[in-house]
Amino acid sequence: MTYAPFDLTGKTVLVTGGNGGIGLGMAQACAQAGADVAIWGTNADKNETAIAALKADDTKAMAYQVDVSDEAAVIKGVASTLKDFGRIDSVIANAGIGASSSSFLEMSTEQYRKVLAVNLDGVFFTLREVARHMVERAKDGDAGGSLVTIASLAAIEGAARNQHYAATKGGVISMTKSCAVEFARYGVRANSILPGWIATDMTAGAQAAPAFGEKVIPRVPMRRWGEPEDFGGMAVYLASDASQFHTGDTFVIDGGYAIF
Image 1 (tube, rainbow, N blue to C red):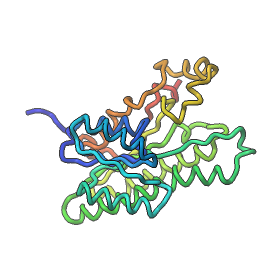
Image 2: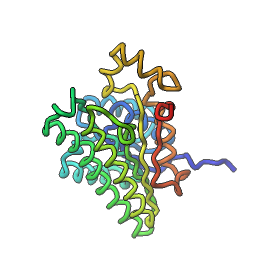
Image 3: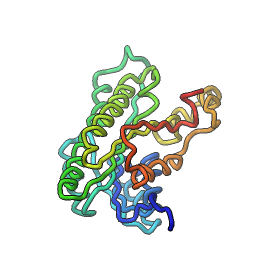
Image 4: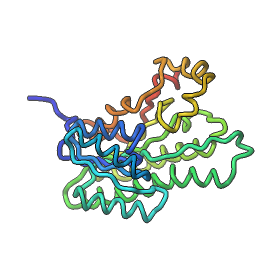
């Protein structure tokens, strides 16, 4: 008998911020494992490009233009996804923004509120609406589901000039653990992923800075930037039946940076 708990055939995975970076890397891995994939993103052109890449894996894939900081848009987005796919088995709440400041003392309230709106409020709206669907499904005899959030090493380390970003990511971890406890009775698990230094659009500035490449990346034991593809295996695991008893955890994917 073949061991096949990582087969995602028949499952639907929703990835917010799934049109690029880590989100697209996870969406592609889930598609390759057999899942139908829905992605949310605010950029229509990037959505279209991402869907073309996903459909190359011979899977059902659709994109929706959703701003997760807008509660009404998230509610509508979940309803549209359910209408088109019939169910959501896993959600990866990945959408987020960065906005570093020259100093905490110079950080504006506007910057602070903007980061919170996307990185924390957006995760709250997304998890709440998808969890509602999963609980309703469980009450009808179809238990199970996976809530996955993307936090950051900034949540557990001192991130100078990034207090607003770090606060959102710390909040995401706490929110996820609370969901893990509350929804376990419905077979729904909740886990967080904490990326380290990953080569995406968000880190383009750091990637282009010679000093960063000379002083920071050499401190990564793996001696390289992480890539979106490095998150594919974890995405498939958390979306699959292999993780049915794994909940409330935080997965650090950073090439060993946090322990060195």
